[in-house]
Length: 93
Image 1 (spheres, rainbow, N blue to C red):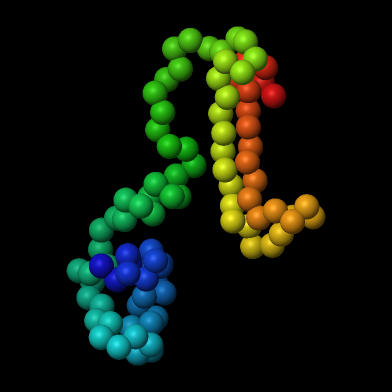
Image 2 (image 1 turned 90 degrees about the vertical axis):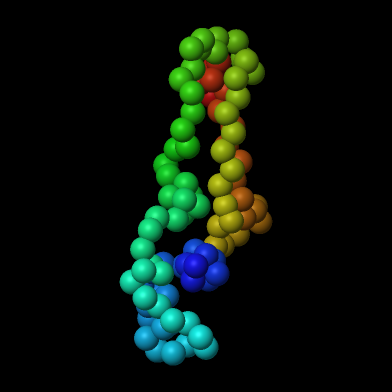
């Protein structure tokens, strides 16, 4: 419950906040900290599950994969905080 309310904060961060009395009414028990957060597990996953590709792409633009990364802590030289990566499976570019 507290993990979600504090924006999916690390369990140790929540324990420190409780120990130092930084949040009124924050009571932490071992029971309230156990379990796995599905949102955090998916966010930390290197890849999301996909079905196997049965037919490989051979023509340009037949299958294009996109990956959006960001928000970066600092701006790029061009002033961007996000990066969009596009990969054409047909050409490998």
